[in-house]
Length: 182
Image (cartoon, rainbow, N blue to C red; front, side):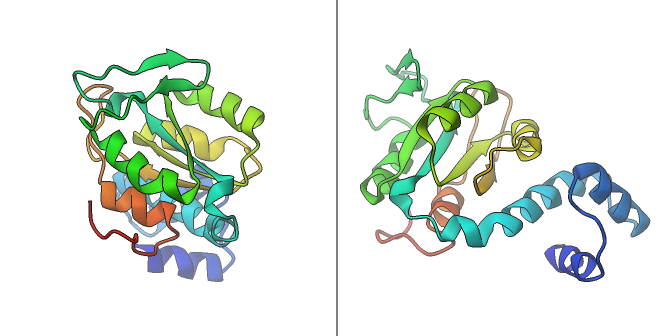
């Protein structure tokens, strides 16, 4: 699919918005359910080089609160949930890998908090993990920083799941982490 996107961009087809992309892909007979995933992939690709130019210490990572474990003791504060590092969920595993690199990690209850944190923290780049609906909304917002998106494997606001390897791959600029697979 990404080769199709590259060919369309090479031909000068407007893919700057989801609506434009849907129109172009519809003409090619591509299924509508694939458009959202392709749109996120396109946005990631467009911003990847600028993202990679930013040091990890100048990046932030947003994780959805719905990834918290059942017995999570995190408390909601002004910057999202404060992880207690109990080790009971995937948030812990992601934080354990990325915080030593300098990432600032925020566990947020929704997209509106993302905008507030970006304005206050002024990062050089960001990674967002979310359901497709939230990723699409974030892609349409003008944050003025390079952002990479990772879709949840299972959404629904409770018992969600994410591919930790994918999060680490994107956050590390598509390079393997120093510690291998989590």
